[in-house]
Amino acid sequence: MTVTFSLVKGSLIDKGDKSYIESLIDETQKKYGCHTIHYWDLVEESGEMGDRKTRGPVIDIIRIDSEVYALGVRQQVRGDFAPYNGLSPIPSEPRAPSLSYQKLGECFKCFRPLVGHEEVFLDIGCAPGGSTYFLLKNGFRVIGVDPKPVNNEVREDFPEGFLFLNTNYAKLKTKHLRGLPPINWIVFDVDTSAKGALPSLLKLMSKLEECVGLIMTVKLEQNFSIYDIVELEEMAKNSGYSEIRKSILPSHDKEFCFFITKVD
Image (cartoon, rainbow, N blue to C red; front, side):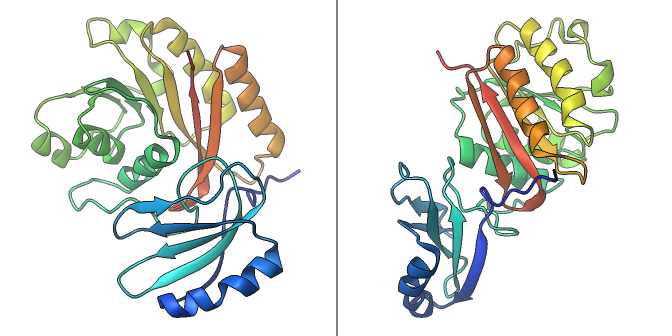
């Protein structure tokens, strides 16, 4: 069975000015049986949720710029941003080395992890530095892991709070982390098999006493099936992680984010 993510990915109906989009609402509600409307503002980074308790088709109205709005329909899922391809809710950062800046921003906006000030992230697969740049800009400390170097912008803009381990994640051991600040979270963005990587990540996390969660990007390959997602969830449950969530990424229709943490 080939996986489809129709339940976490919206269908764009139309674009236009505000009055035109509003004229489409009644017809769209009847056609798709939508029970609630959500309003999103990509310019102001704000949103107004409809009823989140009832599962089913919902309408999203998104302000893209001062004049252009979009109307879409999706199956309501847990999360708080509109999952439309190419419409990232995170403003671009000119100095960020890659689009991973926005990608990780989308993960944070969707899952809102409970992260304290100056907590430490182990950013595995950090080069060229987009995700690291996002974390540092938001006040977190980062230990980056990658066989390739990060771009100069990372060190130039954030002379403190960043350490770098020049190694492949598959060779990373807890001994490499001795003497470094305790790690609270792991970010994993590596072009590899999710099923192959997750067991080693869970093993690593079990040895890091203060590590509470993982934000993992999963590539949607042609042979990736719905059973693989279930298997990822079972791995996390068997390792004691009680909060397991996933969502497609708005700016990357071939990737989704797998989020796990322990709830006290």
